[in-house]
Amino acid sequence: MTNNKDILEREEFRQNPFTAPEGYFASLEDQLRDKVLGTGKRPVGLVGVLKPALMMVCSFAVIIGLGYGVLSLTNSIGSGQPQMSAYDAVADAVENFDSAMFEYLDEYDLDGYMAQFTPSEEDIMRYFATSSTDAALYDYLASL
Amino acid sequence: MAEDKQILELYRSGERNQAFNLLVRQYGEQLYWHIRKLVASHEDANDLLQNTYVKAWNALDSFREDSKLYTWLYRIATNEVLTFLNRKKIIGFLSINSNEAAFERRLAADENFNGTKVQLSLQKAVNKLPPKQKVVFSLRYWEEMKYEDMAEVLDTSPGALKASYHHAYQKVVDYLKKDLDIGD
Image 1 (tube, chains in turn green, cyan):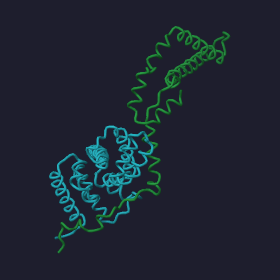
Image 2 (tube, helix red, strand yellow; image 1 turned 45 degrees about the vertical axis):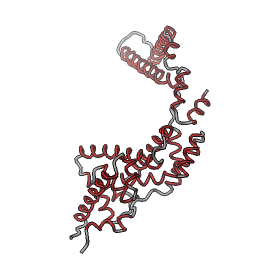
Image 3 (cartoon, helix red, strand yellow; image 1 turned 180 degrees about the vertical axis):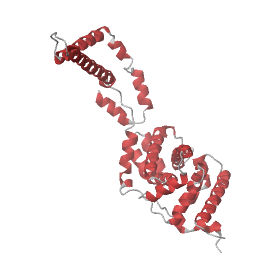
Image 4 (cartoon, chains in turn blue, orange; image 1 turned 135 degrees about the horizontal axis):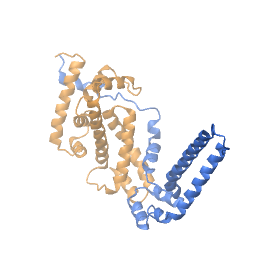
């Protein structure tokens, strides 16, 4: 008669039925180093801050230009009046939009706006004091 | 342990890369298997191991050597696993599919599982345990960790752990008896 309590004493149960993919442990050190030592937050540059805003401006310019072009084409159908070509309409719309945008940017206090994203010396010191990696410091210094 | 002392000395003297390499060489594989036996899937084990090292490395400054480095690492890894298992339990509770059937299907399809029928049955039995009991069973049964070390890992008394292991062991035996159709 088998004692059910002893069933777990069988050697088969103690063996590890799992395997790791081939070469996993050989590359573990590199993989973990990349993940762990590469986790420091990099300072965001000026391009990084402006990129979303610039992309939005470009998208609006394209949408307005296309809309204006379509409207111009539609209005010219069936009318005897000489109309601007769709190409000219789009070009004018983009040009007008650009000049309006530049005027807006001239009036807008861009430096003041950007100042809120620029870290102070104290912020930088606090960042490196709490950052656990030298790699982050090297990356930052290299980016200067 | 001499290696633990070396790791900490290297870390504190600014030789961070060397300290990190030694930390991985010394405990990476051991921690991987600890996690893997609890979550079964290699991908999940790999993710949780990475999280463990990120957390351990960021907290190494605050390690005060009140405990052994290895129990401290096990504690971080175990907390990662418990969070993962509890989240999975909630998702499983909300799912219409049976947890047990899904676990069995996943293991059967896993190319990194080469278990026999009885080993599969044991995995199913352990999978049915509540997360913390599962950890207690795994640490004691497979890793043969001392209760004193387990107490450091799980922040519980050795007496409570002995009782928990006894309950888990009994549940596993009962399940195996039924699943493998073993009579008295």
